[in-house]
Length: 296
Image (cartoon, rainbow, N blue to C red):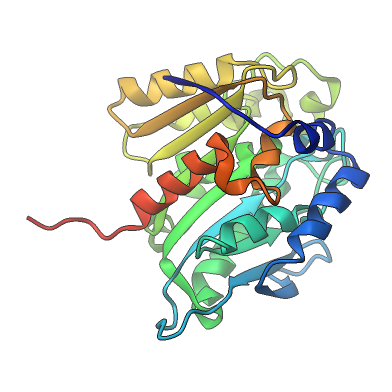
């Protein structure tokens, strides 16, 4: 387990320390200065919230079609239990990754209190299935999918990565890795009243925990966590990584000093992406697992 000192620039770290609408507006305004294209509000299922945005990198001369590795990002917000976010709030995440040659999908999904976990994870699954079936039309490589999320979004992406029953076999076989920022993976017993409603009834509680589905054959996982995080307890990262290691799976863990639950997102903000340890670790992971396997 690696501990890293992160030299986040104080202003941007402060801006994202609470992840308010004003702070997100600021970082997204900066993101719009970059070169990328976006296809917005594409329906992946029938509900009005079943929509996603596809962000495409600036095409390079001579680049073949369908060559971009694809990152599907799920935002957090307590599954709807504490904060209402939308895919538009995370344009800065898409900008950061497109600038390094990745096609990015930001997806909305239904949330508590209107629905419970079964519907939420079904929406997340449907969005990934849509990407597998359609992303080549936007220049994405449907054989090179990465699932990524922050907070509750990391939980959703982890469930899809660890419990292969949520995705069709061909789709799951093309998930090359998972990246979790400040995600809850082992959070029983629940600590918030809304969690009993989101994940109930009680016989279903265990099925909501990503750690319960580790078998050592899952795609590689990158777990990122801030040492100052008071929202998600460190046991989530420690317990999940320990179980993956015990099962002989692939997991990489980074714990960053002076970073909390929200400021870990500052890694994606302009103009500090290439100077930040968090973002650097993400790009190295993506680059490593985007490469074709070496055949002896």
